[in-house]
Length: 204
Image 1 (cartoon, rainbow, N blue to C red):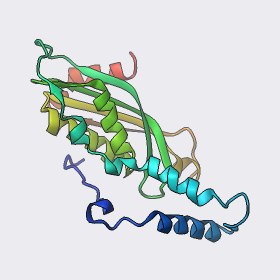
Image 2 (cartoon, rainbow, N blue to C red):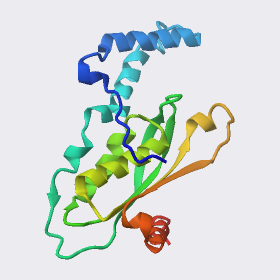
Image 3 (tube, helix red, strand yellow):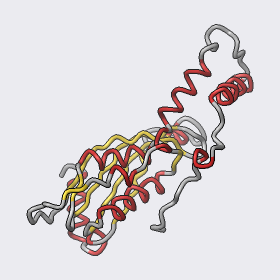
Image 4 (tube, rainbow, N blue to C red):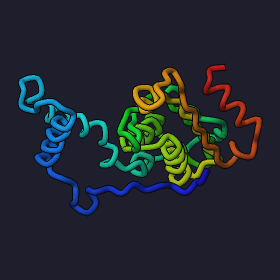
């Protein structure tokens, strides 16, 4: 798997993002295409609700992970062991069908000269999750952001998620979870350290 970060094309960067009215119209078109009447009482406010939901689900495009990781603390008093966050909620949407995938992320790093507030690590997961994604790219993006901003001795990422593009359409297989991992630095070269991370992530 390539470690090259994938930068999404953000339409807001060049002022090409459609207006709210255009988004409302697009939802009305989809409702009509599905075979229903956008003007019936039960659907009359649906376009507004959908556009508002999209604004929340995809607000990661308007956030900067580097800014979240920019405030660091250099006084670690010699701490050089693993910092691990378990069970970070992942709520994202696959870029192929725009269907949700939901699960947990496990994020660890070993500090070199600086640490960051632990809430910032969870925030980085949230920012990248709130974009159209594949789980593989999401895993890479989280690791790359920590690597480039904290310069740690190593980073370990594990994401465990269920994809509704698989459970509610297509093959219709429920309760199948997808696991992706990414290891850098000492986590990649030290098998015992990698194994320790995996055991701690699984609560063992």
